[in-house]
Image 1 (cartoon, rainbow, N blue to C red):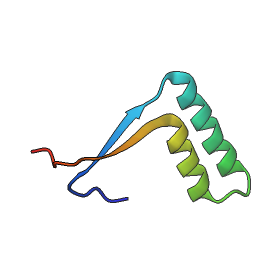
Image 2: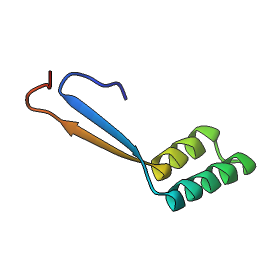
Image 3: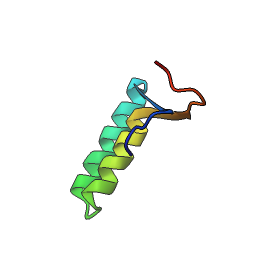
Length: 60
């Protein structure tokens, strides 16, 4: 997803247990026959908090 004017994306790492669970999911995905892109996306979404906000007035 590409950022555009009027769209704010916020990324923040979660607490340590979530990061460890995300790493375990990524390792399991790499070890099994799961597609690597799906394992990497799931790992990212578990380990990081992602928020998207549509702005009515673009920030300067």
